[in-house]
Figure 1 (cartoon, rainbow, N blue to C red):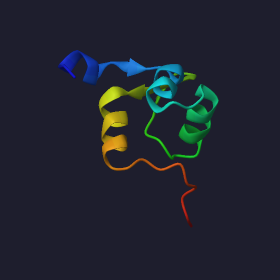
Figure 2 (cartoon, one colour):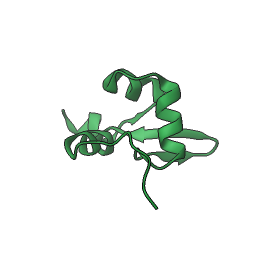
Figure 3 (cartoon, helix red, strand yellow):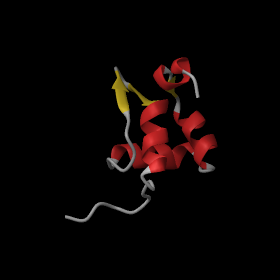
Figure 4 (spheres, helix red, strand yellow):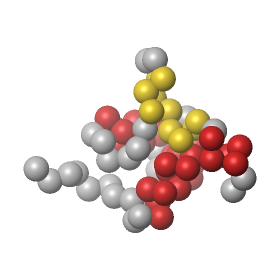
Length: 66
């Protein structure tokens, strides 16, 4: 992965393709704080580097415990 990829903001569809999950799951996970995201006005975007780091740390599809 080069520097341009690390700085690129991804759409939920891009992240979903990387994770082999639907974009709807990506949006829901971002709303719950399960996956790192960035709010850009009314849009949700994802930093490629943050997603790769999240994957490297094992990711998590589980709800956070309170």
